[in-house]
Image (tube, rainbow, N blue to C red; front, top):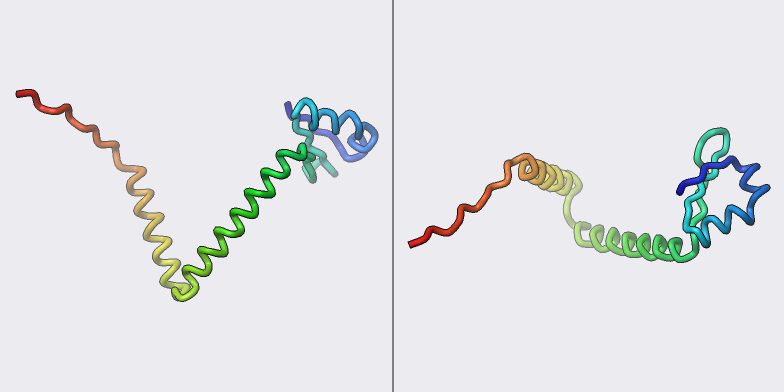
Length: 103
């Protein structure tokens, strides 16, 4: 369940809101001036998110190092070509294999 609340109400009901997140694994979104500004998560989920971010950052660094010698325009052209090829494959109807011929 997702609970939306404003910052004042969250502060007034901090203990209850933390229990919702910790024990019931509910989501709480804190709004300020009608816009979402924060969402507390339980510690295990936060740790998973943090590890995913670290792996993503490491992957970005490896990709950057691997393509450091490629001129920017060439790299962008290769990306555009790869995206176009994938989109073409996604639009193509799936080919079905015919059953094996019997003798």
